[in-house]
Picture 1 (tube, rainbow, N blue to C red):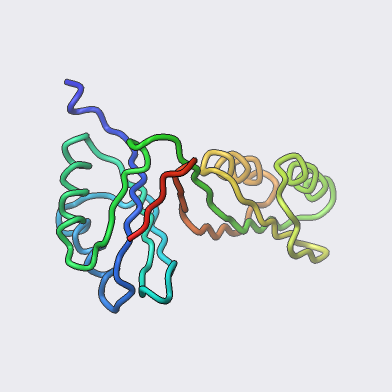
Picture 2: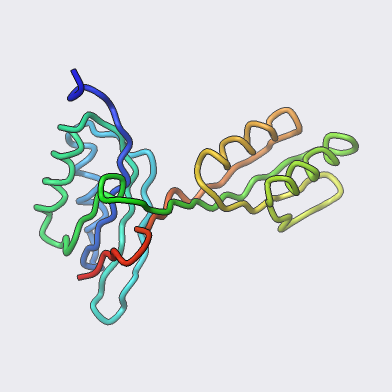
Length: 171
């Protein structure tokens, strides 16, 4: 039965920085009905023309192994790492959180923002925009606390992740 257990996987992939690569990666997931919880991509080496894609997904061990094998077979993939299985790693996300309100609700939002180390990056007499970095659980908790205080809008980057210590994803 342990093979049927769902687990989250954070997969980092080094790919050629060329048109269509992201579409192929997304196509691999959607074509097989796999879920993408978060996906970020950015160039990391201009000289070698490489981008890094970080994908957070969930599935059984078998599904995650299939995802990794199929990603590895995509032509432009240089290196793939399942950070969740290969040892300690750091995961962070950036969020912008807009809260609309006045008076006591606004004061409470600012107090909680301070407690969560969220930076105020914009404020009007009726709104506050917080910038927050941290793991998804921390950001989720802050957003939940802002709901009754006038949460109006959330924009999140998705996860970025990197191995701790000397392990590195490099071509």
